[in-house]
Image 1 (cartoon, rainbow, N blue to C red):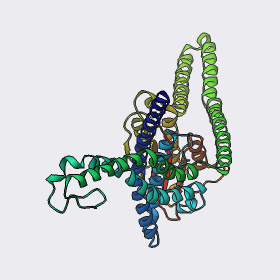
Image 2: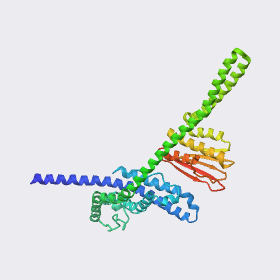
Image 3: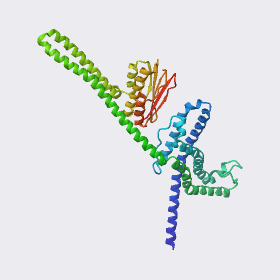
Image 4: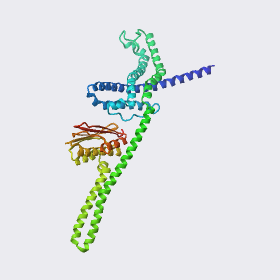
Amino acid sequence: MHAEDTGTGTARRRDATARLRAGLTALERLVGGLGTAVLAVVTLVLLLFTAAACLFGVGLLAVPHALRMLRLVADRERERLSRTGPEIPGGRPPPESLRTAATDPTVRRELRWLATHGTLGLLLGLLGLTLPINVLRDGTFPLWWRLLPAGEATSSLGFPTVHDTVGALGVSLLGVVWLALVGYATPAMVRWQERPGRRLLTPDQDDLVLRVAELTATRAAALDAHATELRRIERALHDGTQNRLVGVSVLLGAARRAVARNPADADAILERAQSAAEEALAELRAVVRSILPPVLTDRSLPDALASLAATCPVPVRLDADVPGRCAASVEATAYFVVAEALTNIARHSGARGATVRVRRDRDRLRVTVTDDGRGGAGERPGSGLLGIRRRAEAHDGTLTLTSPPGGPTTLEVSLPCGS
């Protein structure tokens, strides 16, 4: 009997230790959820302020920034929940307009999570944070209660008022109750706090189907853009460089025949052949630079864009601040975007000036090209703007075009570039 009692006592102690350990782990998760709940409250206030400002029109400019903040906080919660359970994939790039956001099911679910986590999640996180404080306060109360002024020696609940050691020991028993709550209540509180995130931030079947369709479309667009680029290079080599090299060959043949008959004519023909060879070499260099400019490989994206701005017929002001290097494909796409945009400005806009602004915002590279031309730009079949969109979407990026009649025209491309 004594051995059975000893075994039962050991099992109970193990169970209590395991519960306490699980409670401490749950407490850590509650406090982590409190951090994202505070961010949710801040974002909720920002969204409410933006919505109120939209009633007067001025809030429309802040909508893209508010939506990015919403996606950033939601992705932070997805990352946190993925560390303690099934992985929750991040959301797509946030929409850039109020109309697109209103029809996006992911944004609607994120808004519901934001309201729930910013209220219930915040309350549960605060309760979880107070439990260890109450354990420490009430558990050690008999050691320091005499230092308190008369009438203020109370438990963490504010009652009863302690006047003697017996009352202080009674308060210390309340500390044991708090400790039991850490072991028994915090796991349930964690489930209540995390349930809205796991339910609302996980993509549903419709989102996955839409995502697959988008990836299929962008993959097809990337292949089309690649084929178009190959055709452009083939035309440039065939119609330009190859014809000039044929001319060089013809001139060299003529010079060879003229050597025997009239050496003076041969010298003039060779001079023409040399000029044609230099022109062919210059065209070949231009084709190579259009594929991937050497300055982009050897130096940096701002340097490559500076060379583009210098050769544009329209005066261009460049404002590029990109610390570090992005992936080569991302920099090449950004270079293509600016090159195509400046070409369109020079040919069609009638602008007197343009501005190119490039910034790296966390894991996004944002390229903005603005001109003061006549406006009215659109994505028509075969247009450069349609090519820009396809190149951007091939990198899971977005394009936003604002070009009212009369101008100005603003083109913004956002590309993922890693953290």
